[in-house]
Length: 88
Image (cartoon, rainbow, N blue to C red; front, side, top):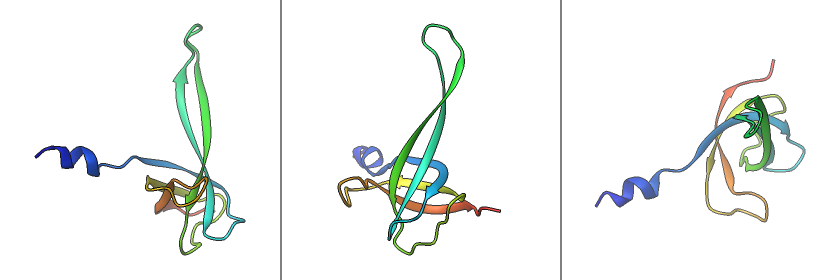
């Protein structure tokens, strides 16, 4: 069956940690560039995700990879997949 390949592929995103105040939770801002439908101008759209960080290892300003997972709480549907770059 080739369905397992599609089923096991999870979404991954990369973004910057904007908050680490909560226990085992970080807030990550993901930015994406889109084109305005009417005017054609390139815009930057951003969205914030609550991410599960079991060991509280990520800090504000870190660039991180996050992966989609099962619902962990009311807002958390993503988990920390790795830290790409530490904040300076």
